Image 1 (tube, rainbow, N blue to C red):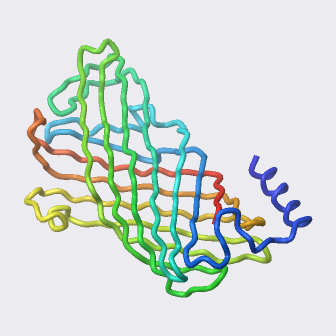
Image 2: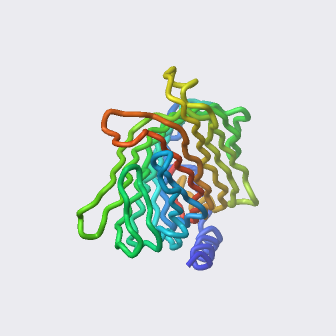
Image 3: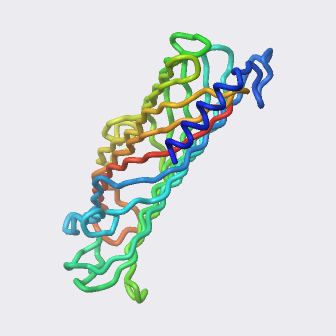
Length: 277
């Protein structure tokens, strides 16, 4: 499929000269809109979680049936203001659901699931992200920008026995500030390569002013290559790494255990994307 897309794109470029006019942006306007969408698959490389100091460190890949590929989508809308400022909003849905028969007893917070018991697992960790980027080297077809991002996570995690008699659920919404950078370089007459990175590593209590002893990390980085088509459209192939997590004790009023959580993940995605700019 990728080879077919590349062949069709090359053929279109050979018969149609690139046009300066955009489908969505007027050439004399001081601002411009960018719209990006990606579709592909996600592969968990490593993923563990633990609830409670005495709880089991559960391996989602080895024991939770995350050793398969999951469909993934990604949507990004941006606003370029002048020649140097970009503001964007990203939505990344992540909702991995699997079914397993346990090979050993596990303790999830205060809930015990026995070996041989069928269990339904959900790991939902979708996020929204607002990003501001400042262009350091403004040029028509080149970009090198750095800036700041604020990510809002929406965690929905559950372990449920297949008969519904036992269940552990964890829901959490919270902001994560981060640094961001983006690069785009032309290749030949119509090709381009690019890279993006958003990330942070920090003790959370020093960021939010609380006394919660939690260490967190985030890294969302990618490389891509594609073709610039007529009328401000692009097609590209993107390889991405999404990783990070948090570890520490954050007691809340709804928790039954001691409030300790350790959640670390390493995901890789491969997607086809298209953009209007």
